[in-house]
Every structure is written in C-alpha cells, then in structure tokens.
Length: 232
Image 1 (cartoon, helix red, strand yellow):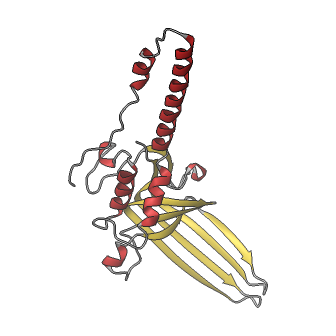
Image 2 (cartoon, helix red, strand yellow; image 1 turned 180 degrees about the horizontal axis):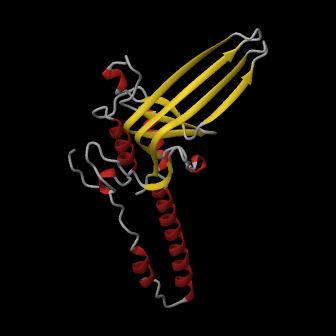
C-alpha cells in the first residue's frame, strides 16, 4: 500500500493573538473589538462543527460512487477514499495497515458479535470492519392448506470493509464493493453496490390476506464487526 500523508487540520491558535489585540484605549473601540471577537469565535465554532461531523460527507461520497468502481475496487478503498475526500484521518494513521489487518477507521462506536453489541448506536456514515462474519436467513412459507416451502441463504465476510448507509431496526444497510454471490464476475463484484446485514439474530412472522404465513429467521452465526465513526 502506498504511503500517503494524513490530513491534519490546523489548530485554532488565533484566539490568543486576537485577545492580545483587544487592549483598547476607549469604550467605542472596546465595543467594536467585542463584536469582532464574537464574530470570529462564531466562525471558528462553525468550522470545527463541520470538520467533526464527517459521517454525512463519507455517506455522500459512497452514494455518489454507487454503480462505479472506486480505485482498485478493493472493499477498503471505498471507505478510505470517502474518508480522504471528507478530510478525515486515514486508517493507516489509526491502526494496522497490512493487507489482512483489522483496520481502524476512527472512534470505535460498538463491537457486534453473536454475544451482543449496540445496533442503536450506529449511524449512517459509520464504517464497519468485518472479521470472519457469517449470516444465514431461513424462510418458511406456509399456505392455508398447510403445505409449505422452506428456503435458506447464507453469506460470509472473511475480511471486509463497508460504509453504513442506514439502520432499520436490527438491519444494517451498507454501501460496499468487492463483494457478491457465487457466480458473480470479479468485475461486477468490484462495483459499489447496496447490501444488507443484521446485527443480531431474530425472527419475524407475517400473515398475508390469503392466510399465507411467512416465518423468517435471521441468524448472525459467527464473527466480529467493529463499527467506527470517522473523525478529522
């Protein structure tokens, strides 16, 4: 991986110098200085707020990239380019950067395992790092006459990175690349695409107007998902 210089925002050290200039000899000048200082403080506060909320910028980049290949098409490249474009700290300045390393993307929000984790603390624009994660979904559809059919699907992520695009209950929606089902071409996998996983095991049941009952079990089978919030 080519080494790059991280973006580091300059510190707002202009406050002390501005304060020194506030030694004024009469009341009118003092009043003018207070107004100027207040305006300057407001401007700096607004600037810091924009820099600290990178999630919306990371999400916007990933959404714009939907249907295209970002960089070399590797999964981590999408997240890295989104963070870089937003002016955030790059993963290789925050933790390990080897090809099979567990990358760090910012401040850790939660860790999801089969034992638990806080799905509600995750928000769009966060970045998930996967390690040996697997899921299954089993659906049983029972008709009014008692006949039924059952289908099962599985998915796994040995080493993967994805951007969170939204949360809906236990479901976590993703924007990601270099992922796809068997039979999908390598080029198609490297296109940014939508995905969905779940942060815990749970079941749902619904009944249609014709009395058909659909029971679905979503299982988080194994692995670890570290959820990070990027920062500058």
